[in-house]
Length: 109
Image 1: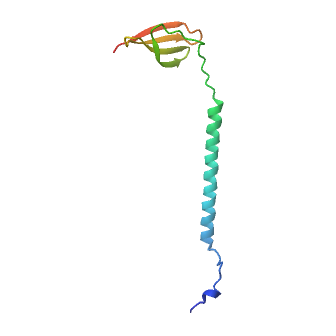
Image 2: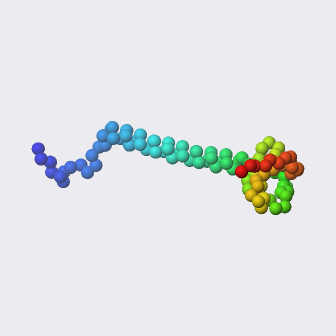
Image 3: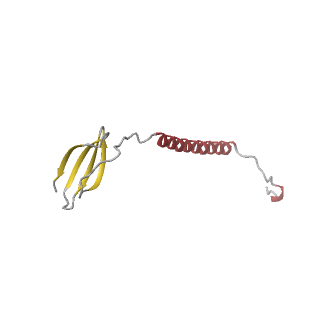
């Protein structure tokens, strides 16, 4: 049985299994896109909604001759690591509301 190429149907019917596979792939693709958009929107909303919530004093006075190296904050306090001209490091703890000194800790080399 030889078929003539000119007599063949140019659009043969699609097999049912292939149709199901195509629908499955398309459904998964749409689900992936929607899930990615939801994740991005959630991140953007959450990151923009959370303010810093950190109250810092207007100014913290570091003694003359020292410069700040690092800052960290806790509940009601701010710690500043300072270094002087000789290389001596200190951790200075200040009150977070008033900026007044609470204490000094010398850092040994």
